[in-house]
Amino acid sequence: TTLAEPAEDLLARRARLLGPSYRLFYDAPVHLVRGERVWLWDADGNRYLDMYNNVPCVGHCHPRVVEALSRAAATLNTHTRYLHEGVLALAETLLATMPREIGNVMFTCTGSEANDLAIRVAKSATGGTGVIVTSNAYHGVTETIAGMSPSLGAGVPLGAGVYTVPAPPADRDGVDVAETFADGVRAALARMAQDGVRPAALLVDDIFSSDGVFFDPPGFLAPAVEAVRAAGGIYIADEVQPGFGRTGVMWGFTQHGLVPDLITMGKPMGNGHPIAAMAARPALLEAFGRQARYFNTFGGNTVSTAVAKTVLDVIADERLAENAAVQGAYLRQGLKRLAQRHALLGDIRGAGLFLGLEIVSDRATHAPAAAETKLIVNGLRNRGVLIGSAGPQANVLKVRPPLPLRQEEADFFLSALDETLAAVS
Ligand code: PMP
Image (cartoon, rainbow, N blue to C red):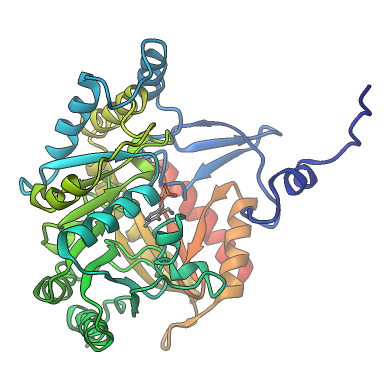
């Protein structure tokens, strides 16, 4: 006989079952039950505009993705040690979106695994062990990659051979973003040389999301990458956040006018289904391929690859990168109008449907208004808009809706933000 479990609400059950490491969004957590395109519904039937979730890039529960997933799952689910056309069709379609120097792709299940693999490849190709990341970077959950993710805080120490550099500065009058960032990278290379560490890689998120969203001016990453390459290291472009059309073009590195050595991707790749990848210049894989067999049981399976192929097809067929550019420009105009009335709004950064809105207590000094940012995030939630924040002071609102966002939905967000800013200031 079993005793009936005492009545517990979801919060208590969560804490009891999942333990202490998980965090929920919002002072009043949201209990979601359904999603469609840019909208989410909670258990009470309330509707929310999803302005945050960069994973369902073609929209929540896109019918073509659901259909591809269902059909593939009902046909065959197996791995990369058998011949199958699906993984090759995905590889071809994906590589066709990239510069021609990028000729190989390897599949994983998460962005963390893709970065972990990229670091192994970088070490084997360069013979170095030093890795440069930005001071509030996030790259993932494995022990190696958590050690390259200083945004996890002091409780997670940096790994051996990991050197941090300041994030790029904001693109304001009189600031040379490219040289300032490159100075930091050159200083890190000098510290490595002093320590007798050979460089393996510069690992950066091409839009510096967790550092607070820094994407301008075009080309600013080039001198830093040049310095790393001159010292024998490679450039790993972490496209987990900017990739798949979000910035108005397919890949974030395009903004920097660079062809990366390795490219990692994940989140939007399967529109919520766990598939991720690392793409590479083929020569870089030679040493790794000789040293190590790579088999990832679920990475590149027949179902996940069917999903990811369909996501790429939908992005192209529905011209979603173009929509991101158009709606992103529309949002920016609206935000500039709001900034005339709300002193809390500072910089508006980013591109396409990946915007960082800086919340400041003083526009002249850009003093972060962290407490107000929290009120804004919760105030928007209470007005039916889901959003989050980033940056070392957590004072940058991250705007990353699914890419099929429409103008009337951008307006819904702008008016909810207008009301919230009025209530908070
Ligand atoms: N890189 C970046 C820039 C990320 O934002 C994330 C996830 N937030 C990752 C890597 C890790 O991806 P995943 O959670 O799929 O392991």
